[in-house]
Amino acid sequence: MTDFMIYGATGYTGRLASEYAKTIGLNPVIAGRSTDRVKHLADSLGFSYRTFDVNNRQAVDDGLRGIRVLLSCAGPFARTAEPLMDACIRSGVHYLDVSAELISYQLAEQKNDEARAANVMLLPGCGGSVAMLGCLAGHAIKTINKVTSIDIALFVAGTISRGSAISTAEGVTAECLKRQNGQLTEQTAQDTAEFDFDDGKGSVSCFPVTLPDLLTIWKSTNTPNIKTFVHVSGGGFPTGDLAALPDGPTAEQRKDSRYHAAVVARGDDGTIKRAVLHTPNGYDFTSVACIEAARRVLDGKAKGGFQTPAITFGSDFVTTILGSTLKDM
Image (cartoon, rainbow, N blue to C red; front, side, top):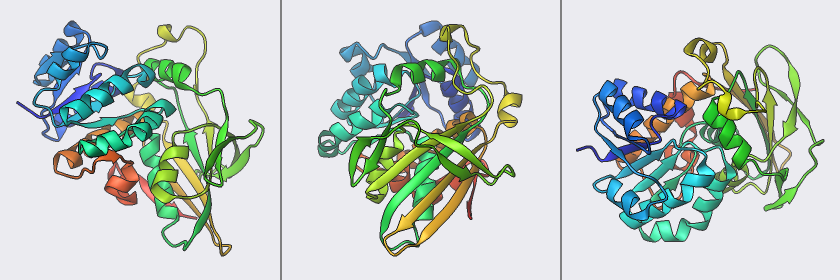
């Protein structure tokens, strides 16, 4: 019996992650709520499976028996993160997820002491934009003696999955926040910024948005002033009946929609560092990065409490994922 579980494996990202796990020889337990869907995926990949509802405490505890590392791909994380984190702390299981919802990071921050006492790592955002931006920020500040500010932007290309759209709709905060002098404060939605993503299109306008990186980059770098931005192309963030959306972009659509990120970091001596990150499409990146993160944790790369990918694996982690590249500007 394996000691690694992927919960929410039948969702769009979870399925991609499970398929990648098989290609590198991992043998996770596939888990979720729907027995028929979970069994079908497990049988197709040759994995064992378990089913349980995160709202049934005893069922979750039973489901995690014998597991050392849990990777949750089960959004919306506003519904699943807390019961799974609590169960992992009770059971001594390291918790990883692929959330882009602020709630996962706020919960991990709140449960830090409890998790540390149990020697359980809480690593939300082990793949996806948090890993991307955290590693990019960590790279940019390497040669700055004392960092005073980080402005960072994500270029989201192509369409998003049905699950991501629902998670975004449920998990988005109405407040537009920034970190100023170490504190989270409101900023106006009109406070746009120009970033050059090194994609041949020059500088483009990016709008401010409350990303989890306001917590994770703060934790990783202790930078007092942080602003997060997004530039969207393609399908972007859909509206209307989200349940009627397709499962997610096709492999061809993902191939044609690479992601980019850009950062401007400043030091107290006037130093300014600019860098960019180029990655495959966010879904391809996430499905590989979360499994590579889990593999490292299974190999002992873990520390109790709330952690970030950049802290746990280093800022070069991002460059190990599908040929992603960091570039100084």
